[in-house]
Image (tube, rainbow, N blue to C red; front, side, top):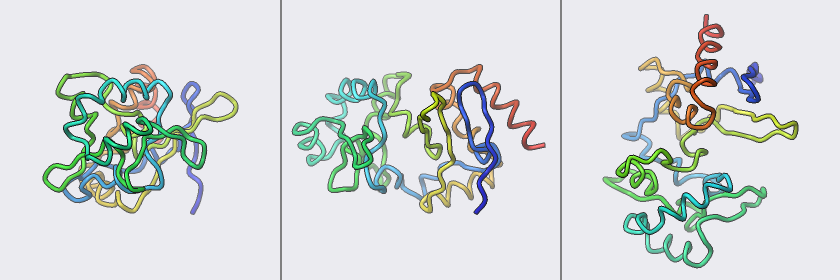
Length: 194
C-alpha cells in the first residue's frame, strides 16, 4: 500500500486521502461500533477531562451500572498502555459514556450537549473520527485518515452521496482548527481533486 501525499495548512500536516476518500457514517448498519471496538478508550486532551466530569451527573442516567462504578472508583480517564490519556472502558470494550438505544450505540455526553445546545459535544478525537490526530515533535499536528473495517458501510455511503472525509467532518474540523483554517482546507481540496 502506498503512502498518500501530504499537505500542510498552517501547523497541520494532513494526508491527502482526507480530501480524496469518501465517508458518511451509516449508523443503521454499523450501530456505532467505533464506541465499542478497539484496544482502549477515546483519546482525551487534558482539558477535556473537566468537560467529561462536568457532564457526568447528567450522563449517569444513560450510563451502565458497571461504567458508573468504574468512574466512581477510578475517574473518567486513564492512561493507556501507549501512555495516552483516554476515557475509561468497561470490560475492555465499551467507553464508559457509551449508551444504547434501539440496538445502536450512542455517546451519553453528546446526547446531553445536543439537548443543551452546547458547543462541546464529546472528545475531539471522537468527533474527528475517522481522522486521527497526532502531535509531532516539531510542534506540528498530523492528521491521518484511519481506515477501519467496521467503517466499510460509511465509505460506501460516502461514495454513494459524494461526501469526502473532510466534508463529513466539517464541523469538528472547524471546532478544532477554526473557520479560516477550514476555508484553506476547502481551497486545497478543490485544487487537489481537479
